[in-house]
Image (cartoon, rainbow, N blue to C red; front, top):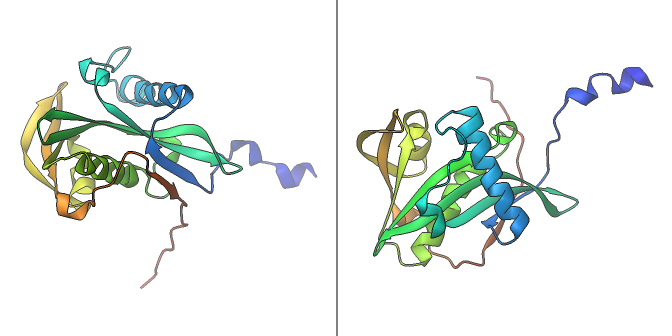
Length: 187
């Protein structure tokens, strides 16, 4: 019996479902901030102790949560959006927990939810300052670079989403994401 379970304790839990939506409850907001601290402070060392700033007062937090028995269980993705000026919205602090980065399309779905939500709230432009290593990922999602900048001592690109690729929707959307195993094709 022990040989069957040997090595199982090292395997991470892989959920079969995620939900992507605006953070609605206190535990979702707490998980949203905890994940941002983990990624931007502990992992990337962009900020010393906390990444919160004045934008958080007005920003709309969006989360991805892995599900257990069909119910959201743990926050594994986060992004925030805010209206910087009339019609111009910005997304920032996109974070996905390290254990969930290659499982499905969590980052892409957070971006889609962010841009589509802002579009539904009247965005005529949607912008983000994207870390250089993520520029190709954003380009695949129909974003264009507006130029290179340095932010927090790191190279970033000012980028703009093609709003025609992101249909507008309301604030009450919840998307269900089911990760699909990657099938490698051999030539």
